Image (cartoon, rainbow, N blue to C red; front, side):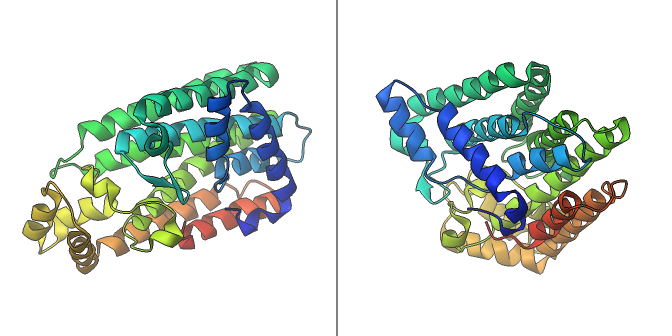
Length: 320
């Protein structure tokens, strides 16, 4: 699922993926078969791209960017495997999720294998980055617990939503930019700006994902829709509608159902659309993308800067 705006780093991302394939090799045949199954679709590779672009934007010498990119992508794959187990997801990137193929027990182990291999890369090439990786994983776990704590809560505060996406997405993006900035020997000021860019982009990226969850175009999205709703995960459009919609009672009735049907979901979309909640979430996303671009003002014009800026515009329109 390559992104066209990454055309200038396409060869680099191809190299990153070759490293991923090599690092996930195993002598255990059944494990190797299932790794290969997941590697059929390589995803957007946003996190790897952030490391490459952040590492080069200052035009200094750099090293190990491809290896760092592979490590974060393998880590991301681990989080997706575990997310699908927690959410009982059935489709990811157009394929059956590995928990559907193997069952949850072996899927957990596969996710653990990915975690271990990502750390192995770090200790081989950049041991001082282990702390940053630890922060990423810790934040992801804290975000999952906060999300679980707030699941099915119709009185959940929007502030809790912002905390959740801070932990689960913003810090991951920010730390990818930090890894790249450090590897690229950026100045102290630049090492502050790039993670800020990543944090704003990460929040905007998550809102876009949340908006896509209200899409009924399964083929474009490549994963099942309205899983968040059935798992009691109420994202920004729903939380906003619960505050302002004139159809709150009907919305609450849908959200409290044990089984949300496709017709229920269509009614839910209509309610949050009528309440202006999809528009509200979109406007928040636009603001965040602008804040991300503002962080890049200290950098001179370059292909890397242009791509990072373009990424914020791409996020506003992406359909996968």
